[in-house]
Length: 124
Image (cartoon, rainbow, N blue to C red; front, side, top):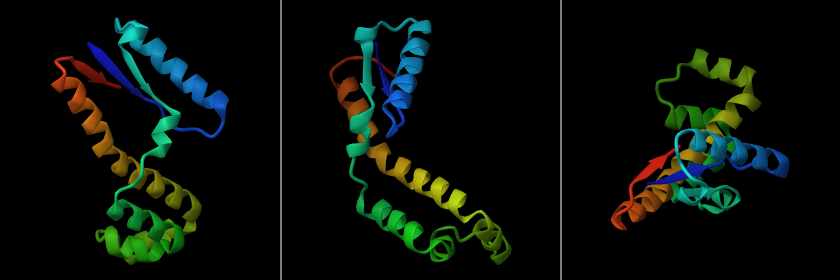
């Protein structure tokens, strides 16, 4: 059985190496050999966001209030005011969320191709 390790991208090589090492060690405790692992790390950052996610990403960067009103319709004016008090943190978390949504189709393609080749796969 193959296992896919999606390592969070880090611009600091030491952090990326540490994240990869921790996941490889964890997979080893679950009985996976290194040859059974498909490690996606720095190439993960090269995935282009689909158009809708790119639009949302750009909007969060340029105008957080407009994004919250358009895409997070359950937010009240009070919620938006609260979000603005920690604007940088809210922006960072929203950008991470949007970025992750854009990577799901690529991960699904990879998983499907492994399954189609007759292999079993476990995603961490």
